[in-house]
Length: 338
Ligand code: NAD
Ligand code: WQD
Image (cartoon, rainbow, N blue to C red):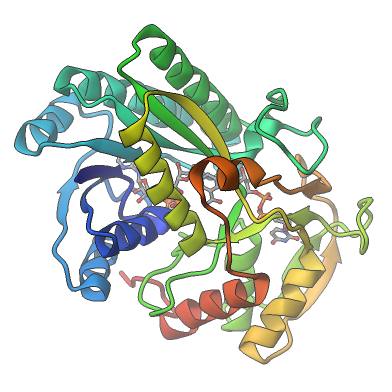
């Protein structure tokens, strides 16, 4: 089975390609490399010992997409490609709407024209907004998004639901990720953020390696056990394996399906710091800083629907997530390099 993986050179996409190859699928990577490097594709081949086709292409390039569909018999698409920095999306909303929403529309048009109507989409827990109370369940109402990035995920979900409602040949799986961290056990692929990381674990790994002096803990006065924000961190390999189940779902059944991919467990910022200290065997310096605008106190999933319907559940715990993140960072201090 050939699976087109948009954004397959990126963090979650590269791990998913490894698991697809291990399971006997034939992933075809499409990426414009705006937030990744082709070195990750080389390493996917190195880890699996298998070849993988790579197209440097933008999802907004309709002619480029048509060529890929003409050259390959694609059975389904896993659609990771998108811009994902919350702060940047507030500064450059039009870029986010064009890339994420415009790109998804063009991708679906090319898919329909090629007769490939099965798609798994990278959505986010951000679509629940701040009003819903954790544990978050798929049947809760969508929340008010607090930034253009989140709004793109909400709108793409709606667009894909409408596409599905308009044509019974479509099958769509919306996967709402919680907080993906960790890396492949080999230490050869992982998250490689540009510049100063926005997210907690990439920031901590750079403190541990000595690139950043200390972590700013964004607020310790939230209504949580230790006052710091609580999130549902999920190992990227568990997340990748969830995509294999989602691909099976869209290949086997038409319709629109929505699943949380999380562990169901919440960890505070200070608990993550502690777990990371254990993994890297050194103290992580931190200072308590003001709250980050737009943050919520607590966000974790109810993952039971994915378990019941996909037969998937996350099995890797916070210690393993931190050990694997640290192995990747310590073995690749400059990520994939220049
Ligand atoms: P990433 O930036 O590592 O991967 C995204 C990939 O898409 C990159 O390789 C980038 O070069 C590519 N890309 C972006 N725009 C493109 C375009 N127009 N055409 C072709 N390629 C393009 O990010 P990630 O963490 O692997 O996230 C993958 C997906 O999952 C994204 O859609 C993201 O919004 C979503 N998601 C991520 C998280 C997270 O915390 N990492 C959480 C929820 C959802
Ligand atoms: C986690 C916790 C911070 C950095 C974001 C996006 C979300 C989704 C996943 C894509 C919070 C605290 C962080 C730091 C800190 N992405 N923190 N110091 O905000 O839950 O989710 O990534 O869809 O849409 O918003 O993740 O890792 O940024 O923060 O104290 O330097 O760590 O305040 O409590 P978040 P995060």
